[in-house]
Length: 254
Image (cartoon, rainbow, N blue to C red; front, side, top):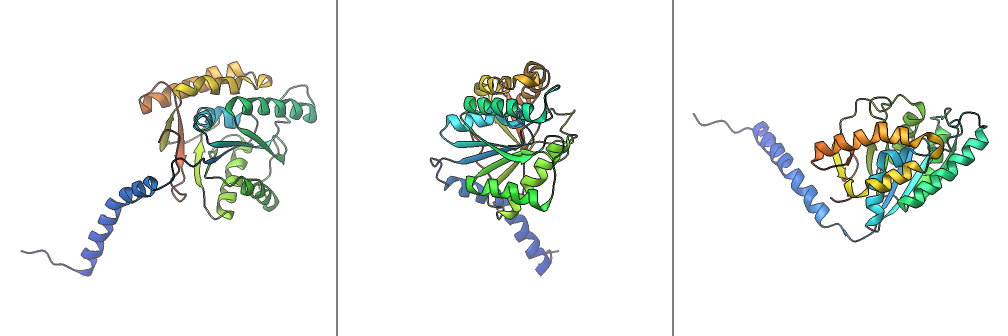
């Protein structure tokens, strides 16, 4: 018996065809981009050291290819040095962040929030949006919102708000920091091979001398880099989650 052709079956078949063609459409869109035009990359983090630890390899890979990178820090790490006043700690950690950015050939930009007491308010949404807008980002990386540290959660929420306020115009990715102890429930959708740039990432992390970098980098991040590398099939990799409603971004090496 010949199957009955109805409006529903025609629509269903068209929908399946659309799904099948979607990857091709994305590939065509990517192919027609000007791959030689420098991208503006922004990596947002709750504290000095977060962008470097989560995306240092990718940042180095971007800047080595001629792209522009900015590390946007929500705080200056004012609560991060035992025995130092908030101002003293903030000055030290600001200098460390600027040194790390020089290693990665990135620019450092700071919001005005307080370490350990970050706020997610309309005024804070407006502040981060105002900082992001003139950077004209093509791709933004921020922290994953399911995290044990309140400053990391605030960074994710405020970046998401800025992305929406700026018309969802840039690609949005989430990165991991101290997987298991901070970042939770993280299932990557994209990977970047950073094998050739691990030494620069390491140097940038070691620039944060006040934070026991040998401890947090060697104990936490080297195993993460190796694990993500095994998933990708290389020695060291960083892993990201792409926001499905944001434009497809050009990751380094893609």
